[in-house]
Structures are given as structure tokens and as C-alpha cells.
Length: 202
Image (cartoon, rainbow, N blue to C red; front, side, top):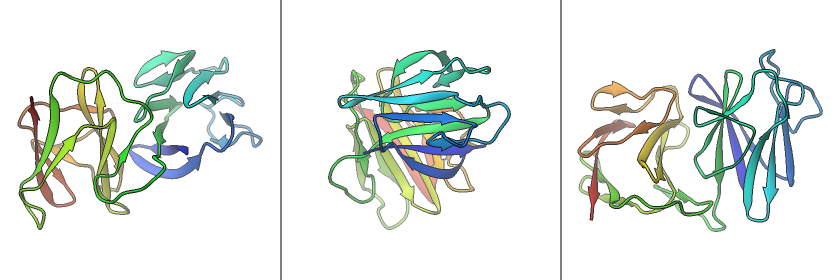
């Protein structure tokens, strides 16, 4: 089942399951996801299920709807996309039918793959030396309830985003911002006190 993570200033506020074919977002109480903020229109946007796919549609809102920073009217959603509604961000996820554990991978559909496959190598801690191949659309890393990040595989490359926790991950010593960060070869990532390295493999 697909879900939206409602975020403000990089922090997850609440999780919403997309439990119907048309899922309404707006300021008024009848919406499936109500955001009580004046920057959000009464009927702002909606998520529409089309078979196995999902789309987001702006409903003529005053301040518009954005996906990954770009204004939209109606566009398909990919796993890991970030929808902007006023100051709030809605992160779209679609869960697999069967679960896993650490480095759980959530897949909506496979994008056009980058030419090389990304790999995360654990440098410190009890899992030192372990490698996580980023072969799926989205991979989440970290410790739920403490600090979680996600890495989305897109045609342009691999993007890391802060997902959960008061402390943001760091890349090469700098704290990750509110926008997805494009990873570069040999980037060093700090997450839940563990150092990780990103590289690509043919």
C-alpha cells in the first residue's frame, strides 16, 4: 500500500496510508489529509490511483503544488518523490507486499537506471565492511525512531534525503538540507553515528 509522510522543516509529523483511489489533500476538514495552514487551499491537491500507478493533481490551489521542486498540474508519482504543499512536504512511498529489515527497499516501479550501480559501504560500527547495493528504486537506511535517510535511484543518479529524526545525516561533514542531495563518487555519509561511503560499480 502507498503512503505519504507529512513533513515540516525536515521532520516527519505523521504518516498517512493512501487507502482509496482518490485521496484528497487540503485545509478543510473533509480532506483525507487535512493541513490547517493558510498557505494551503481548502481543496489543494489529490492523489489518484490509476491501476498500479499513482498521480498527483493540483486542484487549482492558490499557491500551487510542486513535485521535487517543480510546479505541476497533474503528473505521475515515483517512489521517493517529494510533493510540496505550502511549507509542508509530502514524501510518497509505496511498500512492497513482503517486508524486510535494515536497508528495506520500497518499489513502485523501476526507473530508467543509471549506467552504473551505486553501493553503500559501511566503514564503522558492528556492520563494518558490509556493502549495500542500491539496485532498487528507493533504499532506506538508519534506525527507525532515531534517524532514517533514504536514497532514491533516478535516471540522473542517486539522491539522499533526510526522512526521520531530529538530527540530519551529514555528507562530507555538511548537514543534509531539505532538498534531496545528489551523491557523488566517494562521498562520506554519517548516519546514526555510523560512517558510510558511497561509490558506483560497473
